[in-house]
Length: 110
Image (cartoon, rainbow, N blue to C red; front, side, top):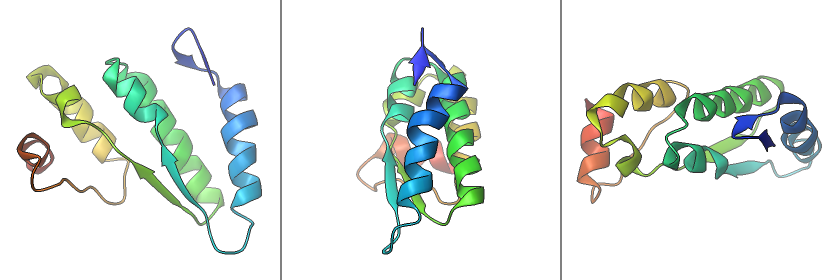
């Protein structure tokens, strides 16, 4: 879905978009977990992380399903990255942190 670390919109639609279009129509509902956003964040590629989050939100406008994302708080521990976390969390309808993750809790409550 990427070319040289950048999302290719046509490839994203061909793989992710068409799959969601098909599976969201199935009885029982669809729940998706996006691992690629975590990989982008791990690389510090927050622009592409946000772009993929925006694509998921585009799909959510078309279909009723659940998207789950998981991020390691360590990717946002650098004070210069905290605004990226706020931007990413702002793209979600719900944000949770495990109580055992003191860094994650601190980052999401700032």
